[in-house]
Length: 160
Image 1 (cartoon, rainbow, N blue to C red):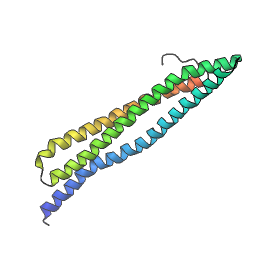
Image 2: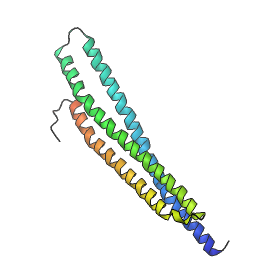
Image 3: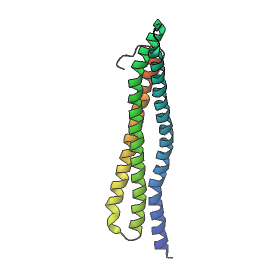
Image 4: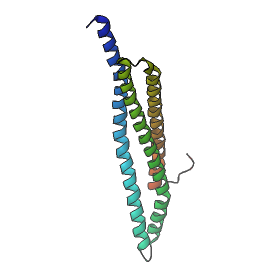
């Protein structure tokens, strides 16, 4: 193998590795976000079960009425957080898929499909955009999470 062919092969491998590294990074983000999504859904179900149990009682003490009202206020906020996490997970999966496709197209370009250059750039750029949008959704969810904690401990939440 000539030096020029070896250099071209090394460059192709390096080019294909960049999307693969971002694939790994997005996979780590996905693992954490999927765990958070599961936890949020479980919290909504637990609160809803608690609310139903309170409503089954023929009479409720004042603290039980207050708890029921608190639950009714918390559930929509938890669902909004779950929706943001779901959107984040979706965009991260989409970005990951686009990174994998760009790696495949880089391989095709190396095999002689020279017209794939712009496709690689487009796929990689869209994958990066998906990753950034997914992280933005995760940031929005993190911002909202504090409000739900304030509600749980009984603090009034203003339009923060």
